[in-house]
Length: 542
Image 1 (cartoon, rainbow, N blue to C red):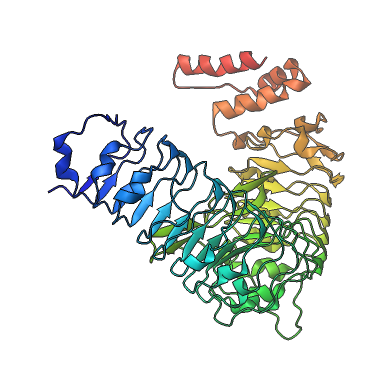
Image 2 (cartoon, one colour):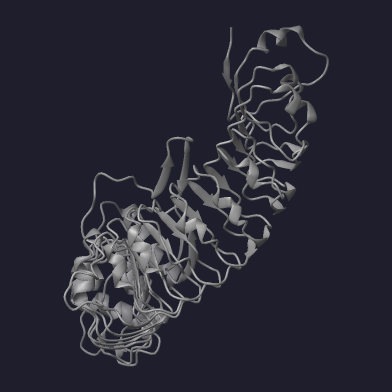
């Protein structure tokens, strides 16, 4: 009477040979899961499972073609999962069996045209293969499909406008292909239920469609890494559910879109590497709140032509960056309940000095990046109130004045880049308390002066963090600070103190020893063994 068998995540050895009568009792089995079992071929026993409805052979080493007998035997199959294998051929007519609802053949080696889904197919995931084209009658079979992923293939040519015909389409992901032409206007103007449209990294050009439906259902739009020009469509304000908007690395020529702050759920706004120009300010003198991005967690306008001063009010109103929310999932995702699929939102930003593509966006990732623009004036002190920030990049602008001491309140900060500006004054001692700060770049601010803060955290930063800052002194820049006594209260352990002394050895071993003798410092530990280990570190560095 066995109906369901799950042996996933084992090291199964499938023995094929003469038919064993004991398998006859399994012909009525409807669910078989053999995911991640080190299988290298389709088990012959599957020939006899004509009542099979759910089959999962994903994450194995199955190669070659899907056998012809599979399509002839599995008459009742409704869900087929073959992802992460080495399959190279569908082994069937271009149209998949009509009753199969869920098909996942992603991460294989399939080539040629994408298989045509059956009339009852709801989910087709053929991403990360080598499919090269859409079949001529592909769209005619999409009447019931709602979830279509074909990212990471070799698709080229124009996107078929007829893809807009399915009325139930919820998600379309054609990212990382070689598609050209313009974006079909019907994608954004006619489709009522489409919530995710990902066309990232293709060769699309032209302008974005300008007329959004009033009941727009979009939650994520990603057009990044294309050649799209023109202006952003103001009708986007109709998309009240929009959470992610990424138009990075295109040719958009527009002013800063304060009007997008009317989108109540917008959390990720990436406008990097375009031609946005002018000041960040409200276009309306009456509506002073029209540049209040209350829910933003990622704000990236880097590498544009924006100018003027940074408005205090802009950052003051980014409430989400200052207050934790307890009723949200850790990862930004779209849970399609009707098809049982979860889609992870993605984005590409500069993080810790590197351009990184995040395959999933954690809600703990809170970023402000305004680098490579022409902003001037002082850094707004209100940024110090955004205590959830993990990265701030304001490099390559014309910012003046001091580094706000309020930055010391950013206890979650991991990366701070203020390089290539015209900042002046001292480095605030408050920054020494940022225990998570692992990337710091204050280089090429010639008017910075005084001593680099003495703290275990700042000892981890090399001279590159302060390159070109001729007014600074400290061991990192090989310029001693006269009459400066180290604040030993910052060194909470003997290891921190030893690190402090050893890093000064650039001035000579005698200088480090003189500190010990002058201040009468003795490293006390609970046992002689621990003391020996501490001093062994000193001897090692010497």
